[in-house]
Image (cartoon, rainbow over all chains, first blue to last red; front, side):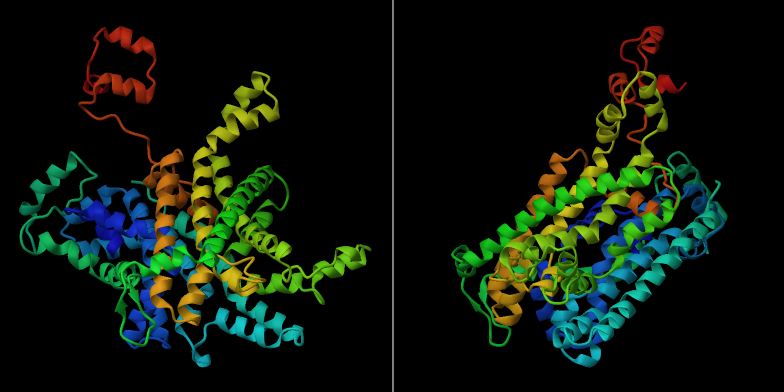
Amino acid sequence: MAAFALSRISFRGRAWIYLAFVTLLTIPVQIYIIPLYVLIVRAHLSDSLLGLILPYTAGSLPLAIFLLKTYFDQLPSELMDAARLDGCSNRMILLKIVLPLSRPVLSTVTIFTFVQSWNEFFLALVFIHNPDLQTLPLGLQAFFVNQYETQFPQLFATLALSIAPVVLVYLFLQKQFIAGLTAGAVKA
Amino acid sequence: MPTLSSRTPSGDAQATNPRLSPARPGLGFRRFEFLVWLAPALLLVGALTYLPILTEFVLSLFAADGFSMPRFIGFANYTQAAGQPDFWAALLNNIWYAISTVSGKLVLGLIAALLLNGPFRGRAAFRALFFLPVILSFVAIGLLWTLIFNYNYGLINFLLQAVGLADLKRDWLGAPETAFPAVIFVDLWKWTGFHVVIYLAGLQSIPADLYEAAALDGASRWQMFWRITLPLLKPFTAVNVVIASLGAFSVFDLIYVMTQGGPFKSTNVAMVEVYLQAFQFNQFGYAAALSVIVLLLITGLSLGLLRILPLGAGRTRSIGLHVVLQSKGTELRPLPAPRLLRAGDSLPVCLDDLRLPEKRNRFSGQPGFSAHHLRS
């Protein structure tokens, strides 16, 4: 949504807001972990999955906005002008024109965000203490620290299981990208 | 529902400049519509990213342990940091880490990209394999390599034993001299594939006729590499440098999983130090001050790099995007044109930008005519 606005609706300060998002690409979450932790604890969100989901979403937004905006900018604006002449609102333009044309970039954003959240370790390490809520990297590390040197088969099985979904998604979406592109190629 | 007639004039006005979005700020809802679109993203990022970054500066001026009321102590946290050799040693490690990983990734990435660019059987499979470690988590990779480096059961010592080099067996992660190189090696192993992909995109952006022309002129392959490939890859090298060096200053997972900063702090890096101070010793204010120092360092570094390297921020990023798409098997879209000729541009600028043949200038016979004339 934000990317669409930044790309296709003009307003004052647009460049600044975009810059504000994109600048965050250079600042890793580790830098502001302490105040974020305080914030999450104050909001009673520590030790809850929501307390991870929200920061993960916020953390992956800059890249998503950057990728989507760059892609939207390249879509032929004639399509949208035509739709507007036919009386489409911005919402309908986004739903009926922009999104269907954006499958390749949407897959890109999906795979990136998925892999990031799946592998994320640091926030989970700081926020989650309840073993029932541990994410995989956390559990993996705990398992390893507690019993390596004794149970190699189990450890390797866990390792293999933990990377299997990412590998599958990677292989699967690789094809999706090509299919998405040939289907969505525009001749305007 | 707006009528057609109210739409048409604005549509006509847009036709002259298609980049301008048709939804111009008008009155009422239309004028603030963008806020509705932006609100969710702005709220999330504002509350969970910008707010913490700002509070960090404030927090770094307080003595805070996370339980009792924070107490204002001015710059005491910073003076404490200044007199704390552990932190500076960690930061120095970061710098070594950055130098070795960045140079390693550039050289290895370029070599691998050159090899993977040539036609041979199974090229796609090789490329996919190279990229695979990039999508795995540092935790899984760190654990795997910890096992490989293990003294008793590790693959490396096993192989050394097998080929009769038992003298070289050692506790790779347990000794300060080998632990740091070992960690750097694993980082290289994981991320080189990413930089390969960027370089591959770069290699494919170089037009083949340049090499043909060079071959006609009798250039050797070595000369082609130094005179054509390397200079034209510059923007891609720049992207690689920026991404790799920012990564080197924020590294945490790998170190935490493999060595926890040890042995004897030999692999300690800034982020591990911040984590320990904050979440083991509950020194929130002090750790915040350390974070602020690193934040300023990273900001300075990225601004500095963007200034030195042959690219502006926007362009660096957009190349990054093309690379991302490319790596997923999507066609590479052309990079944004350098700068289009606009009506009203005076000719000297145009000549510079487009390198028009001199002939043209002579024929026109007009010294300073505008881009307008060129188009007609």
